[in-house]
Amino acid sequence: MSDRAEFQLPRAPDDLCFKAEDFISPDFDVDNFLHEHRKLATLETMRDDLGVYLKILRSAMIELINKDYADFVNLSKDLIGLDKAIDQLEGPLGQIREEVIQIRQTLDCATVEMYNGLEEHRKIREEKQCMHSLGRVYKSITKLKTILSQINSEKLQLDLLERASTEFNQLKFHSSRCSQYISSEIVENVGKQEEELMSTLSNHFLTLLSSKSEIIKDKLSRCLRIYVTLDKNKEAEEFVRRRIVSPAIDSIIVEKNIYNEPRGLQGLYDKLLEVLDNQMKGILESNVESDKPGRGFNFIVNSYWIEVEEKIELRLKSIFAAGNPELFHQRYTETLHFLGQIEKRCENDKILKEYKTHPLYLRFMKKWNLPVYFQIRFQEIAGGVEQILGQPASPGSIKPQVGEQEFALNPTEVTWNSLERTWNDGIFLPQLLHQFWKLNLQICSRFRVWINSSLKQEWIWNSEGQNAGMRSRLEFLVLLFSDVQKLSRKIDFILITAKGKLGELFNSVEDVLKQSLEELRGNFDNDLPKITEEIVKEIMAKSAPSLKQVSDIPRLFRRTMREKPTQACAYVKNAVGNLTEFQGMCGHVTKDVVDHWLLLAVTQLTE
Image (cartoon, rainbow, N blue to C red):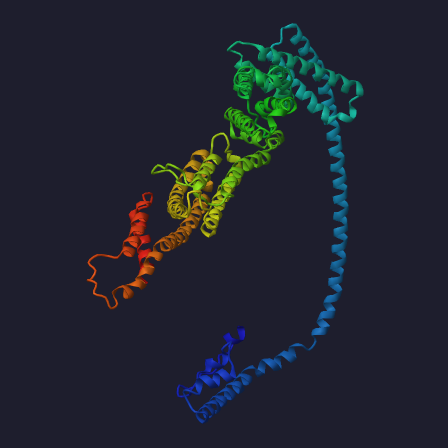
């Protein structure tokens, strides 16, 4: 870059076929240069122009050499005697190096000496702190003993408990700072005072919890703050669980109560919620939050739920059995309602999250064997569908009397009833949405298999004869077409039902369910042309024999004196009569569809 700034390439004359900048381009290439400039000039002209510019470059090079020649000569003169000057500098520089090394050694020694002095000073300071803390330990032991004796003699005053907790914290703090100087007797004494303090605090806490007074909320809050001060949150939660919750629910969570209660398991759950709302009301309303994360109370989870879950799992094992699906569904939904009521009583998101992610909560939910329940329901519903759809189509498949909005075929009605049953309040569970939805799709798929097999099978004649059987098949096909249309339209009711059952969960799966139903509706619509084809074949099979008499017309009128016919022949009446009869049995199908069928039939008859 600097060379280009000092020396500029000579400018080429304007009458040349190229520019000087072409040669200093980063992507300069001889072949490209010739290819581009050959369009502007011939090779002879380009050769002459390059020769002209070469002379210019040579002149510029000579001028540049002449300009820098003096510098080249002076440089060689300046280098004479440089080695002697370097030798003269070597001695003083070596002396300076030795002096720097000596100074560095002196500084290192001073640094080590200073560090040792500071370390000794630190140890002395720590020893002083230990002695100070040791003195504070003896004072705190004496002071704490005095406070505890006053509490025992002055009817459990909260003020003294707060003072005792503060003093005990001071005792623990100073004990940790001089632990190496504390004798085993002092450690034992501190342990006894801690036990005495916790016993006194627990007794006072229990007295407040057992009180029916409406003014204990503030006292409970102060008592809980003492537990926080002592960092005994877990002990407080365990105390409430052992002394309040366990006795209260011990007589409730008994298996015989499920059968003795008028409302069964729901009645038992209601009584458990009463414990939460009555015996634990005061402590939940008085709950305090600690300034330090993880040091607050969670009585709902650590005192109430743990005890309830363990007793339910131990004493009410029968509620998890899925052998009776109706009873299992009832108890599972009642349990979910009970768990939901506990969620509503969680004071904040933190407690709610701890409740929902607690290992015992997760283990409790896994105790409910939902896969087994679904398998039982699957066998009930799918078995009933298979029992009907496994039979071939016959006159017995047609219902005797049919309303306008009802299905005309028994298999279609069974299919729809089975779909509705999967969403029944006593069967469906949102937790099994994906499995019940798959069952819906399987039922519809099985119905489509039955449709295709019915179209291919030979019709089973009834006891009244072939003609009645033929009519029954045609009627069956018409009613099948009508039923498939109705079923396709009713599919939207499945989505409406799912929305009512799933609540907020529906929003997250709505698009997937809609897409699935649209695909299902498309499959049913694809079956309609197949049914139409079979209907036209049946009409043709019934009307075509009458048209065979057309071949007799020449024989009837050949060499005879018969008058010209003035009305249609009998075969025409028979053929048209079959179409009229067919039109009469299509009351369940729209006029447009019937007209389409007749058009197809007449078209094929006249070909």
